[in-house]
Length: 85
Image (cartoon, rainbow, N blue to C red):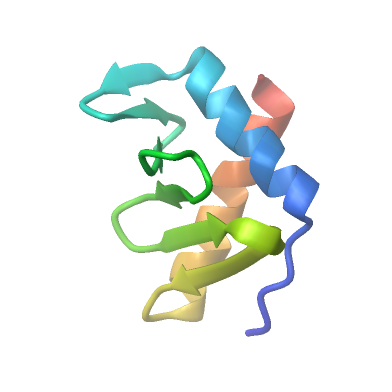
């Protein structure tokens, strides 16, 4: 599966999770997704139990997952956050 996601969409979801999510440790949790940024804010991370997204400088991002179904479920969670908040 080729993962192409709009950078603005990723950043928008991250901000919605920070604004509306429950604070958990260093990050925020909303809709099954945890969002965390590194100490300087240049790299953000969003993850559920099966997929990890790292988004960094120059809008480069990387997904880590084992099965396409995991990624599909992750995208559904992101879209739900986008429409619900």
